[in-house]
Image 1 (cartoon, rainbow, N blue to C red):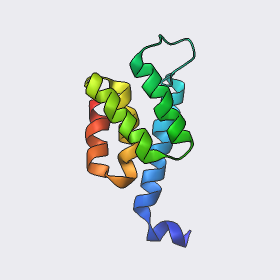
Image 2: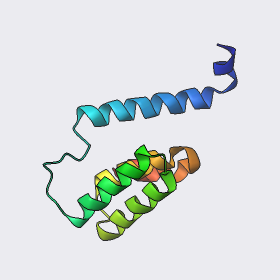
Image 3: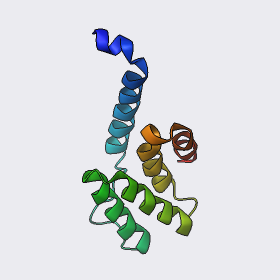
Image 4: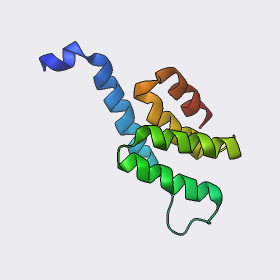
Amino acid sequence: MERFKQAPGLVLLFLVLLVVTIVSLLSGGFISPTDELSPQNNLAVTAQAHRQEEALEESAGIWLEVLTQDPEDSYAHYQLGLLLVVSDPEKAVIHLDIA
């Protein structure tokens, strides 16, 4: 319990990520095999694969590429925001707000 008192920000970050993940799973926010094939979906699948392999910088770069093609893609903003929460919280908030 003492460790949690020393790092309340990490506990809050964990809780936020947990809630966001649960909401995403419940809302069907992940790409399914039946989704329409498009260059953006191919990039999204690649970005998710990198994220699962913990290649977070590569995944973030791909989401940025998706946003270059479609700046209003809320799913890409959401995924990029999640990836940036730890490394760049200010940018993460911007992308999560847009999503």
